[in-house]
Image: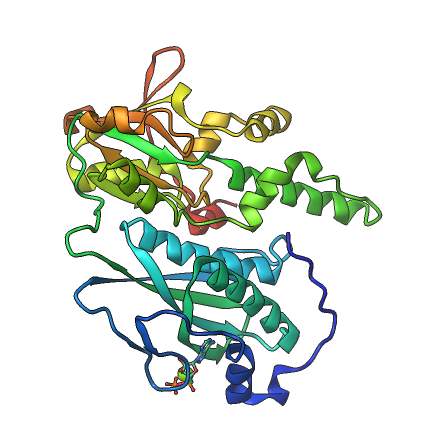
Length: 352
Ligand code: ADP
Ligand code: MG
């Protein structure tokens, strides 16, 4: 986890908008051949030659999509970048550039913006991304951050949500539910702290969960992994909004149904033990927890031998005729319809 070392407080108004932009962008380096011009003009200039260009954008609003009492600004910066990159990787693409747009209220000092950008910069370095521009505004209340990611894919190599066929295997990367539980752990610690500010949280046994919430990693590796195995998925989607809702999205866009097997859902041991402790159903958490920056894809059954046993991926079900709908097959061999209730931050707030 990142340490928040900065305790100074400099008013942003002392710099002005241009001073602020210059201050936060000057440490970023351009490293990509496809970046002709980055920050500093009216537009960035990119050269994608004969590749297809991928563009995607995401927005995060304080109080709706994140809460700064559990999410330090550096982590927020890092996670915002991961969110956007994940959408490029879900198209089977390579991410190259981002644009960063922020609106900040005057309650944030310059040091807070520096923290945010240090997380963005770390993500750019680690994932080999050029930061090529953005926009800056003030906001009346809270922080808004929007990241646009730009990437490339060889013509014809992009993978859509719509290509799954009946009989295809449904595959997910990594493991499920840990990020949501990490948030539950942090929320509980906050409440304990409010009652007893002297309490020293012992988060050791939840380390993986908290890490998955605060410092998620997008699956840059999967495109290459699949290529090396000689497998091209028939469809793919990113599941940061929750597994069950994304299964339904993928199925609907492909015009097929799906059966998912409860006993195949990949769970980390910390997810299992923490679900027991919190009296939560681990299957529910895996299906609708959300914020797992993993990829969900389908492959032809003929590719089963190529993918089986790979530790990065799990076959969790198969696509069926559309008329079967979307079902969870439980350990007791019962079939239960999946609901689209993914991780919708807006809905969650409304329910509270
Ligand atoms: P414009 O008048 O076109 O909005 P700006 O003065 O806002 O231009 O931006 C100047 C340069 O700084 C542009 O290259 C822009 O992309 C970049 N920029 C502005 N705000 C940000 C930000 N928050 N993060 C990164 N780059 C930014
Ligand atoms: Mg501007």
